[in-house]
Length: 271
Image 1: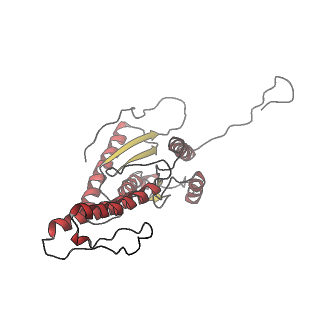
Image 2: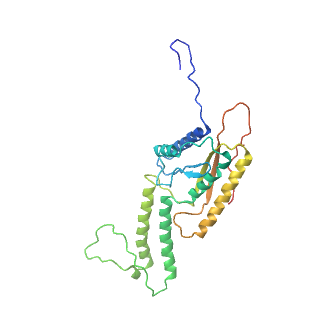
Image 3: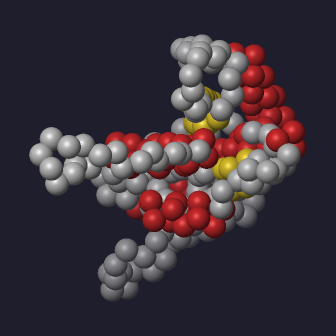
């Protein structure tokens, strides 16, 4: 800000930001980067906040990246942390556990792939289990257009396997087209083992604290995978194959130096 007199500069005051404000700004910037790199919206993000409890700001994965307006409204509803709250009752652990749970939850695209794989696997299993002479399911091809006059539906049981497989392939192709539509235009993605990334914005100050958080994440993933194995057949969740974890340390600018976690490259952790 300048005064009307030439060369006169007047201070406009100081704007102070809390660690919470910095964390929210960091989350917005992370969202902007993802949106710029993947403008087709096929990279999905869910946000979790944690104080004395963990809370999802985005209830599910959805079919595309959450918009900035929706994210702003979510943070607005969440509100700021209580500065007078008992710090001993607050923990980032709750939020991290919920983040792991979110990664184990399948997206709409993954659910479609599970249905497609189940159909193919079921067809192969029926072929192995059905002995000659037994009744088999009649597979009907999807109606693409009008049939030729006088053409009747054929019982695929009386056709050789190549012809039957050709009919099944048309069904599979239709499902693949639906999956393609879920990925939006020009964004064909092959479905890979369930994986994800956890980005943590925290004010943790020591290497030991970071090591404890990394260990906790590994233990939660292992426990989550064991639980999901016992729920075989649940189409809403899947075991976690790989997780990348990044910690962003947010700290106040003060006079003097104090210890901060040491920057480290990605480290592989088995779970």
